[in-house]
Image 1: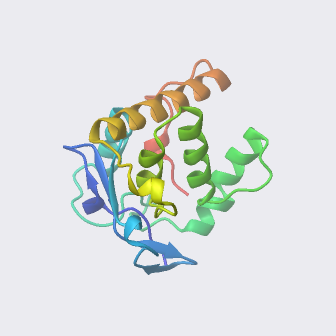
Image 2 (image 1 turned 60 degrees about the horizontal axis):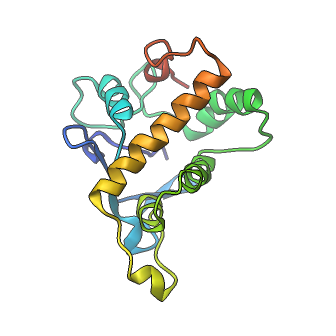
Amino acid sequence: MRAGLRIPDVDLANRKIDISRAVWRGQEDTPKTDAGVRRFSISTQLAEMLAETIGERKQGPVFVSRAGTPLDMHNICNRALKKARKAAGVEFGDLHTFRHFNASVMDSLHVPMAVRRMRLGHAGVSITDGYTSASENDDKEAAEAISALILQKLRSLDPSWTLEGSNVTNAHA
């Protein structure tokens, strides 16, 4: 089964993504916990990239092949992601690796723990966590800071790299 982010999950006007499904070994299900159902901010740059990728489409998966069919996770991992891993000197990685990367970036940026938990969909495990909550402003600031750090890293790897010339929105597996 092919699954992933769907167009109705993306609120470009408010720069938000809604997560209400989980995928495990190709099977779609509900998230493991209530915290897994969430809505979080995305950066201006990501919203622009998603808008270009989605175009005029109103339904279906956000990311599709050249033929307009849903992308296959196996193909993404063994084609595009394998090249990126090799270039970065990373031996192993799959799509779940991006969650760990996101968590590490948020940690590096000292994003408040409540915002990290909310963005990752993790349920609280301590009483102290129950007394914290993510603010809308912290969430938006986190989205912009994550984007800025990733763009900075891309430009450090290739100073000529630009968002417009990245072909990210045209990359197909």
